[in-house]
Length: 115
Ligand SMILES: [Zn+2]
Image (cartoon, rainbow, N blue to C red):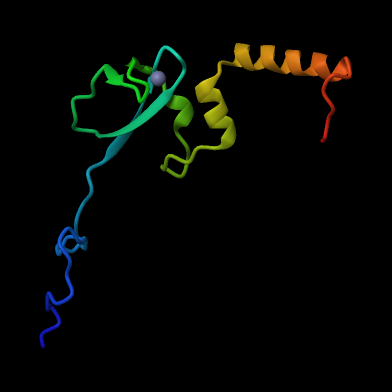
């Protein structure tokens, strides 16, 4: 029986084409912000015509973020930290307001720290 036998293949299984030697298209990660602060990340080929809007998972129209330079990293991969994700969802102004509110609760004894 030859090595390339198809026995045991299931319909819808993996492609029989080998990935060796395949040059993947270079991509650019594009972020879209919807009106209720959902962030959608879509990786496009650098050759793609990138749309200015995208339909968010909530059904609202999300607008392409112009400056996503904050998401570049020296590894060349899209490695997002928890902080990156927090920043995608809230502006620094909102984060400061939230921190101030929480600290106020701690000071008033309404919120215990470290529990
Ligand atoms: Zn949304």
